[in-house]
Image 1 (tube, rainbow, N blue to C red):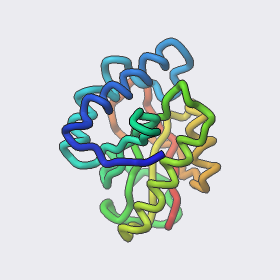
Image 2 (cartoon, helix red, strand yellow):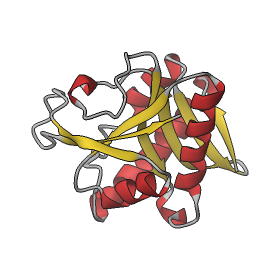
Image 3 (spheres, one colour):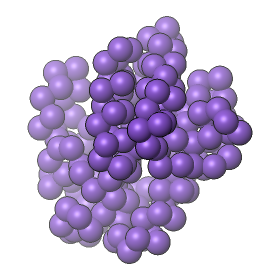
Image 4 (cartoon, rainbow, N blue to C red):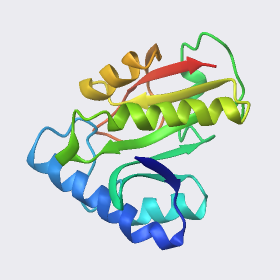
Length: 173
């Protein structure tokens, strides 16, 4: 497997990957509460690509996973119970991490998170942070297995009625 930073040429593949994931989630347990045809989708993927923060995990030439890695918490991270107080810009944030539903339990999530940890270290960031829908037990198990520390359940002021609070996690580097 390999991870690539997406370019405009990868937009369709990344959008189709998230479309496949959200379609699957609508028919099964939708832990992250994503919306098929909504978020994450073509629009958010295109914006992430234009911002240079969208990644694909490839198995051969097929998308096996995807995520966004940037400095933007996309909400009020100051509310977190962080073990170390850090200003924005000194940590990276993982968003919309997803593995291909046809390849669950094959280590794709761990591979992507390990990549994020190494990237943050190589670029000199102090920590890696993220937020998870509180009922998203598979994601929480993954991050805890990768030595992320729970940093509280907080309202990030994102104004998403179906997700009023998020569980925060950190891994100091």
